[in-house]
Amino acid sequence: MEIAIIAHDGKKAEMVQFLNQHKVKFQEKNICIISTGTTGGKVEKAGIEVTKLLSGPLGGDAQIAARVAEGICKMVIFFRDPLEKHPHEPDVNMLMRLCDVHDVPLATNPATAELLVKAL
Image (cartoon, rainbow, N blue to C red; front, side, top):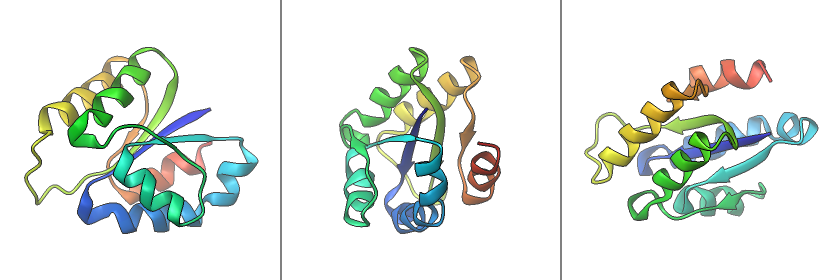
């Protein structure tokens, strides 16, 4: 199963912490993690295997959205920072819309992500 992870700059440390807490479950369930480039780099440094795509502002959000539309990516965990402006907001909105269109679970905060991971 492929899961995408994305985190805005102010949430990257929180994403790494979340993944570390669930590392064993992801390994047990044979979860393949894909990520936008910068988030993926932080995750790799923490010792978690991840396939990195482009950075979000350079098209990484759109790459993940395409994988959602193609039926490859089955879950998205996106720790958004709602208090900051993001230049690639149209791509973020497109990704969230495609998750809704294709009925793909989307967590935008740790509490919801926790519920999704428990359901694996």
